[in-house]
Length: 389
Image (cartoon, rainbow, N blue to C red):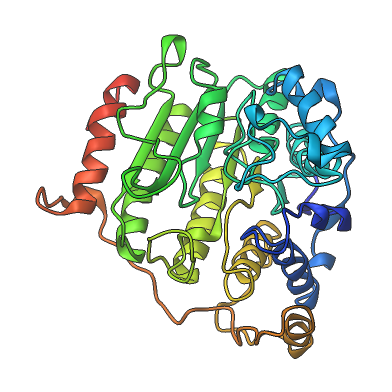
């Protein structure tokens, strides 16, 4: 296995552009790659531009009629069929939509292939993590579900146990749906409670069905949850599940929209806590998945202050060259930020927080809303896996 991580990148991914008024601004991708380069992390990894996912790969998750509808809308956006979720406010059709969506999916699939084949231990595609797309439709800014496609490809290659951990502020509904009845895949999603946020799914009682019962785990966090609660919930659920499941590959999704500055959600997590969870995922991959780790991006709509710093930390951790949070950001990158956005970029790689949390094993407070959320998850899902609540 190569000692160097792979970073999936092709400049063309910035063509994933729903328009000037849409919150999914592709500048977040360009600025992230710019910050990766500013810190020299592109020299600590193998930067790989993979091919777009072809139709046979897309059909591992998506229906052929949906792929055809995306292709048609890509050629003529005015012909978008809203019955497939495209041409809507959330997912406007745009020229070249199929090509760039398939390109992003191709990066995640290639990352999974490289990790499975032992070409690398860790692979990062921060342009991916588009977890809301369903087999037959677009949703939530997502056209093709690259995390589900990466997992499906791993299964096709012979993987028998793949764990997916999603810490985006929104429920990873599309990935859960893709493997709802598949015992080979464990999906774990920590997200803001469905009462207060799209897609209004991800209740603790959603635990899978048939042979896959117990294979879906959901932690629905109260709005306003900050660092201590978020980290407490993660560590109260994820490590124990992975220790039991023993995945052959760990796939993680690191949407940056849990941040307190994100305009589309209501959690209050800092960059420093996001970094702590990334580091924990890296450690869990080494502890339970023989180091096989595919790390993806996701949501994140504070496109200057938060997303580039968050995902640059992710790349650094995967490269075994972590960026010290106190590091001053190079002025060359801040100049790039101003040139692209006319905004001032952040000065350091930290929000100035020191994340800490109380371990679940030390006891819980039945009157605390965060503890109630964790307990609801453990009671709903853990017994199905033979684990104690």
